[in-house]
Every structure is written in C-alpha cells, then in structure tokens.
Image 1 (spheres, one colour):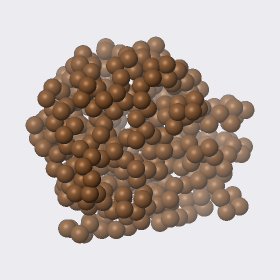
Image 2 (cartoon, one colour; image 1 turned 45 degrees about the horizontal axis):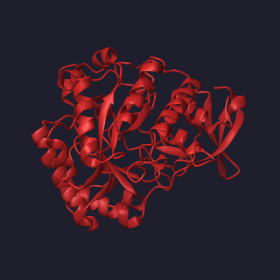
Image 3 (cartoon, rainbow, N blue to C red; image 1 turned 30 degrees about the horizontal axis):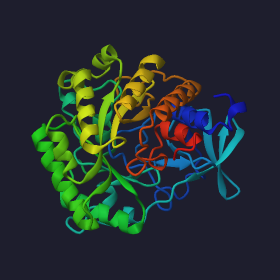
Image 4 (tube, rainbow, N blue to C red; image 1 turned 180 degrees about the vertical axis):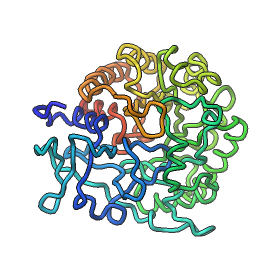
Length: 383
C-alpha cells in the first residue's frame, strides 16, 4: 500500500485484507470480554493459526468501514494502544484511529436445552449480521476435491470452537436473543454440502424456529445453501428467508473447474446461471446474490461476471481472497490492495448503472468486513 493514499479508506481496507494485520498485547485488552472475538464459525481467515490467542473478529475505520481482522505477524500493519484508544500504523507511521466492535451480551449467555454457550451456535459478522453454519462439513474434502482456497476442514479441526451441528430450536433461541438485544438486523446462514432433499428440510425447520422465537413470518437475511435448483428455489423462499445466495466462486469457466474441482462436478457454470435467473423470478430483483472469490481470476472475467449477474437482476458479493492456513493455496500471494480497490470501483460502476435494488435489508456494508463492493457503492451514496 502507498501510505500517501492512506486517506483512501477503500484501498486501506483492501490492503489490510491482503496484507493482514497484527496487534500489540495492550491493544488486545478487552477482546473476548468487552469486544467481539473470533469464534471460527466456518472458515479461518487469518494468515496464520493462533490457537490459544484471543483475537478480534473485525474492527472499524474512522468512516465506519468494517474490516475483517486477518492475523499476520509479518504484516506492515499493526494496531497499538494509544492514549486510551487504538491506532493503526503502517511501518510505524500513523495511519488512522480504529475501534474494536462491541461484544454482544448474548455471547455470554447459554441456551436452555443443553447449556452450551450461544456463541458456539451463532456469531455476529461485522456489526449487525447474525451468522449460522448449521453443519460444518463439506463432502468435497473427503474426496480431495475441495475448492483450492477453502480451509473449512482445517479450521474446524484446529479451533473446535463451535458446535459442528446445530439443532434448529437452539438456533431459533439464539436468534431470538440476538434480535431482542438489538444486536443484529439480518441473518446469514450456510451449511457445507448436503443432499438437496435433506438440506431444504433442515433449513425449513431452522427458519420455523427463528420465526417462532421472533414472532414474525419472514426473516431479513440470506440463505447460502448448496446451489438451489428447480423447485427447491420456491421451497427455500417458502421457509421465510428474504434472500438467497449462490456461491459461484469463480466466473471464468475453465478456472472454476480447476479451482473448484468438486463443486464444478455437481454444479456447472451454466446451471448456476439458470438457477440464479429462476431465483430472481421467485425472490425478486436484488434479493439474489452471486458470491465470488475476488482475486483468483483476471480483472476482465471478474467484471464480466459482475455485469452478467447485474443484468440478471442479482447482486454480487465478492469476498477478498488471501491465502489461509489449511487451504491448498496456503503460501500463495493475493493481488495488491490497489488492484482490489481499482477493480471493485469498476464493479461498483457496473452495479450502479444496472440499477439493481441494493438489497441492504438483507446484506449491508456493516455486516461485511471481508468484501469491498458495499464500501465502493457507499462512496457513490448507496448504503
């Protein structure tokens, strides 16, 4: 990162996600008690394992931008305590004041059924998104055909910090507590790889429990199941969730097959597009998301994907890739923060011109510390 451009909060966030960040012992005071800590609900996003160390989940830049904390002890970025606050430095040069995010009260509460901590079942992403992984399992790892960037199995084994399989009623209880506290505005839910018939029943029971505990008929947020196809799309809509996502990962078809060998066998590029088109017809424009891993394919194919999905009436969630321990791409290098910032601003131009409803009721910049598109759209006044 060019420190002369540190006022560019979008590039700063991108650089922090690409380079990672460390924190002094004094700066970490209160993490896990007063401030929200990592609980590894699905993936490990840090660049090195940190078993036994309590690290923040994310933090805020001065303009309210949410940044995922990706631990890297070799990073040029460091957060240190400074006169009662926190200061972000780049090679000992002051960049900006930052803040940890408050730890919600429900994190220290236990569910009524088995006494497990609620945080072992659901966690908050960013400031206001309640995340559930209803089953931490992916069958592609068993066959050695996992996505090359994924470390789901390694993370689960390394940290063992959450329940691997969550009961629907317990998820409902946690959701009720989180909303009652005023800690969340929407939900994000996923669950490894299932047979479609089994997964839709699991999701139906979960949302029935959430609706019961909240006293509502529909839930703001997004379900990210195994790719929903055909009649399953309407069945997911009928569960009460307001939006659905499709983890396409890579737009370029040849790269998709190479980087996602197991997933591409079960769902082709064309099947994703047909399903997304059908989902927009069921959920409505802006309530369907194409999820891409940004940084593993060329700028032109990534932007082609953004354009095509936008023309279909879908929104895009592009996660910023960096190599993680336990993934097959561990030790590789991501593009620069400047590259990410430039490309995502082009993506924001495409999305803005397309006029797709932003869908912020279901997903917003405050719940996403690991992608940049919401922040680039916020620069344009879309928040």
